[in-house]
Length: 183
Image (cartoon, rainbow, N blue to C red):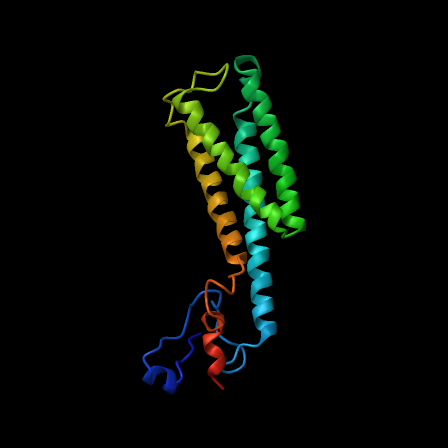
């Protein structure tokens, strides 16, 4: 379905379409009412929460698959894996049930810390575990980096979108809806 640009907007050389936080065609002519924006934001929030929960479950699954053998080889890594799996499942539950900013901060920090631990395990090694130094090509490790990096990116984008601009840093007119002047 395509939407036409109003003649007065086209004459001014302004393109309509996807802009920040306004990624849908307006429902009633060219005016967006607040209910449409609230519904749009709620749907986007639900999608982000579901994707984050699946990503956190993926982190737990990847580490569960790598768990066998860790107890005898590296008990510290075994304990860290268990703690990570429990934290991932608990955090996935928190993100599903609430869209609290604290849950999103945790959803960004947990995988970021796992990425740091991965890099440490491949460079200097972890205490009691130096077997993986230089082992950058392990398939589960690469999958883990992908899922965790995606979670950091998703959580960060949600947190950035929630930032409230301070009135001292920008004029109020900078945050006005540009489509509000259309009938």
